[in-house]
Image 1 (tube, rainbow, N blue to C red):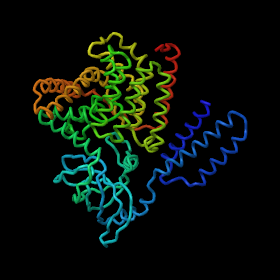
Image 2 (image 1 turned 60 degrees about the vertical axis):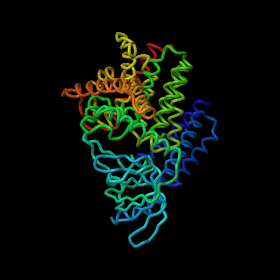
Image 3 (image 1 turned 90 degrees about the vertical axis):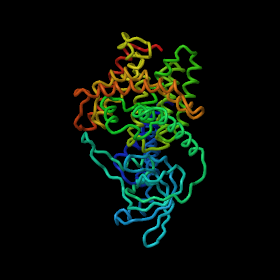
Image 4 (image 1 turned 180 degrees about the vertical axis):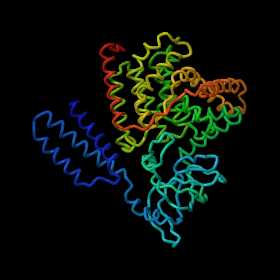
Length: 495
């Protein structure tokens, strides 16, 4: 039975992947019907291999159908005409994502049910559009707005490392299919109060407390660590974090949360296993709720929960299977994340690395002390980075040579800074001041910034890898898989 389910799941993921790579429009039903017919014919045979192939084809058919159903083709046919005509249109809609404020513009996503042309023709459409407008107005989640501008489609561009970035597919995974830059926006209704809007309001109260009590750039770092606040750091410091391989601590991703939770569980290792799990899950839930529980946060939190489960269950076999089930469920919910969402890919691989590799990698760092979770920081960092390295080299092309060292020096301070920073903001909201916590948090953040600034100044800190074919990345993962099987066989983990 296990093999049959595995064949069906692999077929589904294969169908989603094939559609992601080779088709821009939904695959015709004729192709899917042909797959189902072939698979049904195979079901009449009693040979095990034929049954497995039939289930694989059935899964592939469902994968193709699921991905096709996620493509917003109906609205595209209407709106693509306005993109080609390059004329201004007026859109009525509501803000469905928290606005992001940059130095030169404000960015938010609206959902619209209709648009109005300059010929005063009203057309019913249901789609999401990313809008960039000026910084003169404070926008909030849930507000009703009127936006005027030229509609466009996200375009592919080349990154600094000569990688081609499919921006259109990247936005499509979050159900955003069009952009409107240099737009004029006006709020005409404040909208209704909702749970998510209340959560965003609470988050901004925390951020106000942080910015009021802690100076820059330390406050920007804390905003990034606690809430993954976009543009919390200026461009220069953001580049420094990228050079030393520490960007994962200032963005909302499973890569960040998994590493922090791994260290958190070690810091409270003196507690009973069940209590550790409860505290960790509660902290993850509180974090997800506080930052608004968006798609990225939910994926990161789910991955972090599995790290906690690994500690509770005490067996990697069960938790690995549970992790795979969680990943498949995420793909079923949103099939575009499998190929187009690198944060999902990094989260999954990093979590898998922490589960599978950490027991073996720990032997390499037996010489490091356990105090302040120094050894655990090194183990968590190296385990995750080994697993994500081929993907990072292929997709991003930048590799930090000093990342393990910097992570060891910084990561032990991150959970402490998160805790004291959170309490600082909370005390500011409740009491108006937090003098002692404020000083402790500031020094912790200054230490992290100093480490990053110092190590990023070395010319050998990181290297840029020229673009290479995807087959090489696949070969790297095959070799990595062979190596994992070898060490599992030679040094079985008995946990």
